[in-house]
Amino acid sequence: MQKHIDYKVKGGKLLRIRVRLDKGTIKGIKITGDFFIYPEEGIFEIEKALKGINIKDIKDMLDKTIRSKKIRIIGFGSKDVVDALNLLKK
Image (cartoon, rainbow, N blue to C red; front, side, top):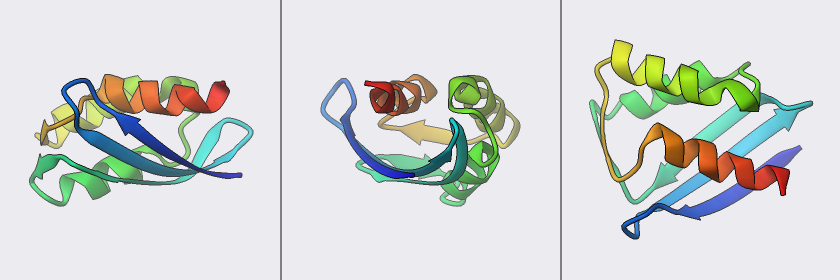
């Protein structure tokens, strides 16, 4: 099942996520929106790291990837991605 989420981050930034799920596991994910990320390839590293992860376990993987790849993000945090994806449960 493919879903599209537009999520307003506190402070007014937009986080747009397209995610393909199968029984709660992320099969594909694309994150775009109103934010800056350095290095720019960092967003692809994050998306790659989340593939195959159960939606309930994404915060730990996000934090680990951001830390290990030394990714800097301005405009959203790992909790914002979790909050946006939790909207799928409602």
